[in-house]
Length: 504
Image 1 (spheres, rainbow, N blue to C red):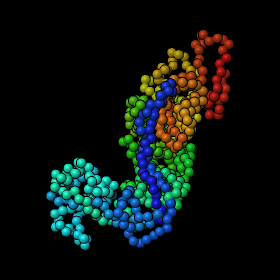
Image 2: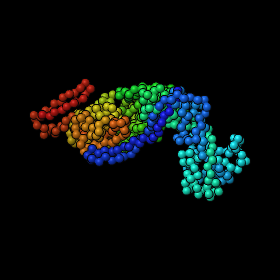
Image 3: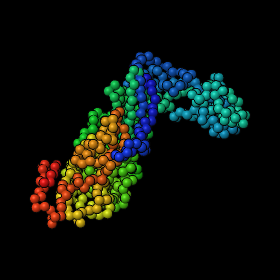
Image 4: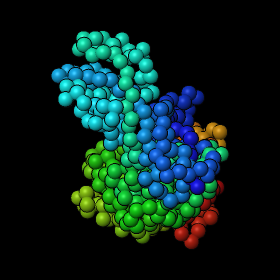
């Protein structure tokens, strides 16, 4: 039983947009990422033959139809002979003519486009080496009239007859591209899109249910056609919001899950099966780090293995980096040493709220009295907007005006969230406002990070943390305070959250 997949690989460009909370136009920014995808249409056949397949029309270099429905990879089954156009060129002008015809020459993986002549009996070099054949792309050249004006002029200039010959070319599995193989193997009948992300030597896939019978074959093809990939995994469940990892199965190759990755000039190592890493966020990591200046302080509430924290430290910032996942914390510490920034990063293994109410609260007043900016990064899109409530009343009653920090040194927050709403910008802003219990109208910007899935966007809302959020009450000068003034605080939890405050 064998299968054919009909469709085409395509580049999916994810466009980033920048939104202003106070302006209606939505401005295009930069491409957020690229993901390679192939689509398939599935159909079953049963014909099998031991004879090599011969075709006079390569089209898109279709493998033999006999491989349709294959579930275990048989590379020899892809062998076939095809008839391709060729042109006879004298060896003394060969290099010049090949250069002139490069746009219409045959380009296939592992194939030579210049070959020896053969006589009718198949004997090699019947012209005593005076001529060679240049194989041409059958999609571009079908007759002598197919040559463009530039190619025709070059052939005339080098006295090469504009005559097309046929050459019997042997194609094997090695000469086919991965999308061509999958198009030939996967069954027709359903329009399916699938793709993979590369994390070091690991290809990470999200296969659909009806692709599962072919998963081992798909995994092996990905390894064969992508140098450097030695392991292919498939996600078997959704991301766990607690530790941001997911269950996976190995489809092909080795079981080594420790990946080595270089992103924006920074090296990372981690166990991909136990931590969160998304190669599609490299542009976003770079965007945030570009906002930082030497001497700034970065508070990374959900640091993972360090894709924000380590580049920030390399830029000369002091970093407080936290993650609840013990494995992420361990690899974060490893990567700080790997990149020689361990003296610039203080790492924590805590719940995000506890981190904000503990180490951050202890250090924030002193940082706010300084002149260097403070950036708070909260990249946990599934929950981060809800964690903003940890900043309410964080610093208690506001001190005397003469002792308070200046407005331009309040922390800058960059908080991420997913949205499935039609107006994703409004949605994430309203959810941030609900957590902070304050309006951000005219005080924030919203950035589209990437399209995660149909009707699901990843957004980043950035704003200066309002003074009215950080302080639980605005204390008046004691000499001017009315004698009957009373501040009553309600809603303190076991973890020290002050949910509401009223002044009478």
